[in-house]
Length: 294
Image (cartoon, one colour):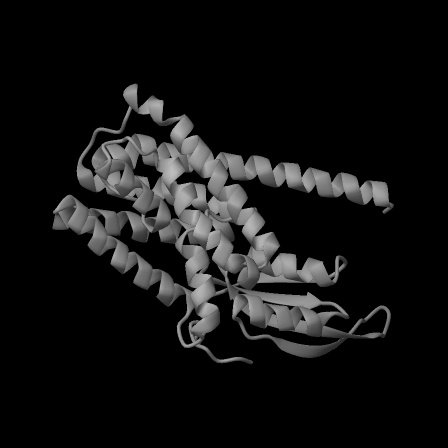
C-alpha cells in the first residue's frame, strides 16, 4: 500500500472514530438530560460533579461547561504521565459529550422519563453504559476520574485502576448524599454508577470480563514493555515458528481487561503496523487484579 493509500485509510479511520464517538456522546446526553437529571440523580465521576454543580447553582452553570472546566487540570496532570495521544482522545470525548449535553438540554422541556426512581436509576445507568462504552471503543475517554486514577496508579502501584475508581465513586456517593441531604439519592446514584460500569464493559469489549491476547511480531519485546508500563498488565514472550516459512517469531501473550483492548491495539500498531493479533474470551482470570508480573 502506497503513502496515498495509507493516508486515505488513516483519514477514514479517524472519521469513523469521530462519528462513533459522536453517537456515544449523544446517548450519554440523552441519559443525562432525559433520565438522570429529571430524577435528581448523578452519573458519577467528574460528569456527576458537574451535574451537582448545575443543581447547586440552580442551573446557572451548565453541566457541559462545568465538566470541561473541571477536566482541564486533569488533562494537564495526565499529559506527561499518560502521553499526548491519550489526552487528545480524552479531550475529544470530553468536549463532544459536554457540547451535546448543554446543546440538547432544552429537549428536557419537551420530554423526560417520568417513572419510579428505581427505574430511572437503572435505565439511566444502562444508557450511560452504552454511550460510554461506544466512546471507549474508539480509544477515546471522557476524562474525569479515569485520568486521575491512571495518574495515581502510576505512583501507587499497590492499588489497581479498578480499586482507585471504586474509591473515587465511594467519595462521590458521600458528596451526593450531603448535597441532596438524602441517603436515598446516594443509594440510587450508586445503582446508576454500578450498572453503567457493567454495561460499559459489555459494550466496549463483549460480555466477558477479560481477554486473552496473542501478538505475533518481531517487536514483541517493545510492545510488551509498553503494555507493562502503560496498561499495568504482565506479559509473556513465547517462541513460535511459522509452519509455512519455518522462521522463528516471538509471540507475546497477555491477559487484559476488556476496556484496555483499544489501548493495547494502539500500542501494538505503534511498534508494528503489520502485527498479527488474536483475541479470545477468558472465562476466568485469577490474579488479574493483582500487582504481579509475568
